[in-house]
Length: 298
Image 1 (tube, one colour):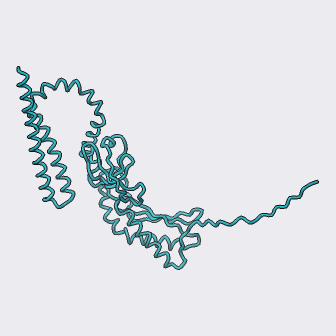
Image 2 (tube, one colour):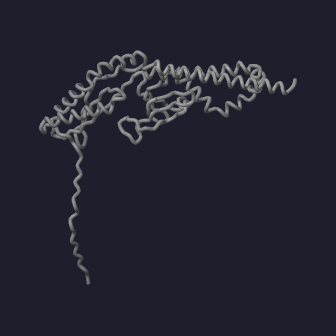
Image 3 (cartoon, helix red, strand yellow):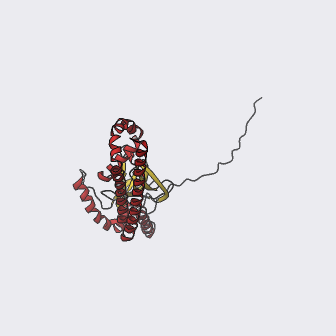
């Protein structure tokens, strides 16, 4: 067979593939633009665009397989022999793709969840085939707030390290506030104040948490824990420590703690000294002048 004919046939197929890719690219862009205008909900718009992107990958693979079906059939033996070497060279990529499948179908996490993966904590803003994109929180910023860094973590890490999900089946956290009270204060009144304020701020909120927790109890082998605010008292060397424990939305932890602390301080001031906040005080005293007289011997 004339090699020039083979070259021209191959060139024709390459041109056909390039033309098909151009058509697919234009079609996908039009479809994504239409979806962006049709969906007002941010979550639905994002998911629709991701589905379209995956659909475009399938179209490209199908186009190449249809046009080069004969060539691919002849290369099947070669691909089989080279498969082991390719698997070793692309091991991390293959594991990341497997991790993506596990994330999508294994309910590890989804878009919008707050997770900790590979020691990095943040909100999931994108799940790609190879990497998960996080908007990082913490580090030099306190209070579970964004620090501005966008972090890409390989999907392979879902098989290597624990995945902490702050907002999966139970999008709430238990949090605590410790209030030090001076010895000699009315600790019963202090305990009553702290519990009353916690009930005012998160008491009604805890009622709605019960339904979510009951779903957890039905789904997992877990005890029926208390979600209402509770106060504990402990005496230590310096003061009486009152701890209030409560359930809060994982995104409202800092704001809720601020509200409770502010109200506690306001109510303690109203007791006119019956309850006082304890604190450690260090008083530095200047060393007195020492006069030393040395008697010399003969």
